[in-house]
Image 1: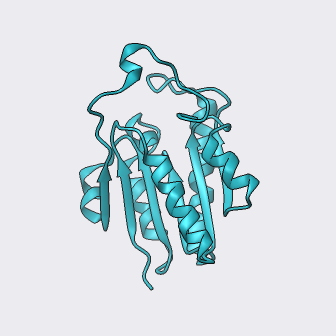
Image 2: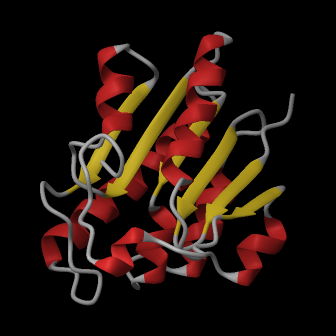
Length: 171
């Protein structure tokens, strides 16, 4: 089986949740799985559930609080760089049938990760490893290269009315 490249992008909600749904499906079928999560608070419900049930290997390269995308600090940039190094090792090892790089495309959108780096990550992927990348935006060249691209498009969101992120629903 050849692993494919999947992208979940857009302003709409559900990218991480969709990728963790695939994680559950793959793990339930006995596949070896890993998640490298970038930028996010380390208290998301998906991560807590995966850790509590021992679903895959989870590696976190985010902050305790939400970061300012307009002004990422050196600490978060260093964490993203460390996450990319680990992700490259996981992908090239051949030890995993599924590797999810959650929010790496958001790191691209805010200028922390380059288009060249994204392609280098795909190039390092072992033949049988499925790669899922999530985030706000992907470069057109990566979209063309991917096997599946799903855009979550926001039509309406309660954030626009001032509703804050809620435990159990957004994190």
